[in-house]
Image (cartoon, rainbow, N blue to C red; front, top):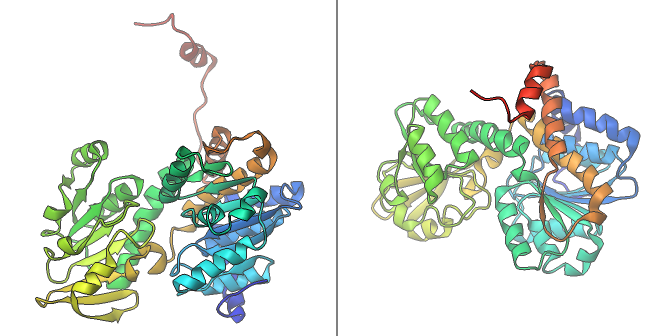
Length: 416
């Protein structure tokens, strides 16, 4: 079963997936292993992910391992229609097309849950939220889930803390080979890629404000600095704020930064990071974008309400003319700009994240009966294995400890 924009786009999608596979050697090796060991034989996996060529490689790995897979898009603007069509042709039950409205978005999620999956692969915890709300009758069939975003993990930890989590969940986002690479390198590059595609702005000499200095914010800030921008950081946490200051960035509240910025990028995972009060202080021509998660970081409804007029001026770029004549530009309706206005993270970095996903699915299929209803970290052996496989694929060689070095590290007697 499937619901996609146009199944005739499958040939084009398959070509893109083939290109991604060449950049994802770790996941391709895992796919080959899965095709032999069949760890998901008889298992139904329900997924809510950005439908990109990289996600397609993961879905094909799960299918190769014997799973029946149902997939919905995790963002109304991130689905690549040719990829969705290609997945439908290779046996994935996919329900996704670019530009779905809210009702159709949840229709797609519910179609995935209609397959009564035992294992959930989530991005933003939307499937898990439905299983704790409107579709809670299906939750007893789910033996475990995994979540790959900071925002989703926050939601699930809150659910677990309240004692209401109905099945164990693994926080893919929190493992080093995910957040140290996907969030940092991937978000940094893909966010600026989407900024340029949507606006063609020259960053050199501009002031760029990054809201949030987690791994994603660090990646955006470093790359913007490298392209000649003056970078300002806004933060609520003293530790990343201190690091930002010591990394050479200016740190200040958004109310002050709003007067200075030419470009604003939110990467916090929280709501109302930029509101009408901030917009009222901004320069004529300010550009706003979000690379956090949901479309709540920039309060679009407030900005619409305050605008005298609005119009689309480029693909994925809306112009909001304020009552005083200033023009404010917002990328991709405040949704994930790096996926809505570009192609998401490069395949090479998603090789790590989706290898984590694939191996964690295998681990959960084997070990779920021993787990409690709480949020778990990815087992360290999975993280180490993924790193070792990626290092080998890149042709990087490591030193090896000598027996004397191992003895020294294991001893407390030797000193100065």
